[in-house]
Image (cartoon, rainbow, N blue to C red; front, side, top):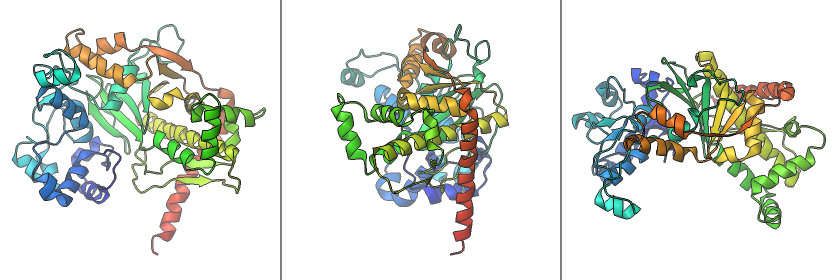
Length: 440
């Protein structure tokens, strides 16, 4: 549902208010946040949904309600996606000006008026019904939740890196950027003081790591985009057949090995010297915050074989990594000091994806020992709710473990600097084309 962009006109109206709460979402609210979705439901499903609904939940809060019967909400989703302020609470004027004054009238009963910090124990733990459904013991502690990407960030960002000669060693955790990469990608950076920047969500206080401000960059389609490009190519059936013939190999493992075959003596990344992709096929979340941007590919030929599929796959991965560099540079310029990337999620299992992110950003990459870092983050919260750890910080330092470390190939820096220059030209040109066609 977060990826559903049908509330585009609603979010345009919300952004048109220029309300002060928007300064905490990068000055431009995303269509992926909840106020425009709620407004869309009120305007389009008033009788069947809006007027009949008892509560509106984000998924993590819905799950804790199902587990405990308690409607208390976690600070994380409310701050990150609903405009709740940890120190001021809800802003009545915002909901009234956007046309959702009915939420104010019932004292926010439907969207949350009891708020818990992530890791706090919810109610009396599992209800008898939930315990039976899950095969667990009644009363087992249930923690106030995190959004999935934020749980991934929590599971990886605090891991002990001593003895690995990383630039973030002996430096504060604020020198790390957690990148949670799956269907989409989220870029989580924390700071001691609030950092405001256009196009990057936040600053959100205590929304991921207690006591720290969170900024969240993101790309709306990454794993989704790679799948779209690969599966939509005319050579995809051939790829499927050849991967299956090689002991049922994963199609992306096969593509990576095929790129190694055709690269000859060059570094594999250099194969796209004249093939460039702008990856915003589903709009730009960060750092441009422009829902209207589209994807671009420059350098196509009439050839449609497996080589060409492998090349467009590589160019798409590079474009995603160049987008990460764009977000990273925006965060650095605003005041973050990031030296090391911590990757987790499904795409972190792809060595080509990881290496391209290292080479293109110029930063070392730390992979989590447990690939499913979202589960580690959730376990950290559970361990706090059960009383096994006194704080989230203690739990994440003890439970987060690092796996492989991937270093950038600095000898390729000039090539990727040039690719980045082209990357920025692509969006500049797209906006020029849009301006030319504006009056038609």
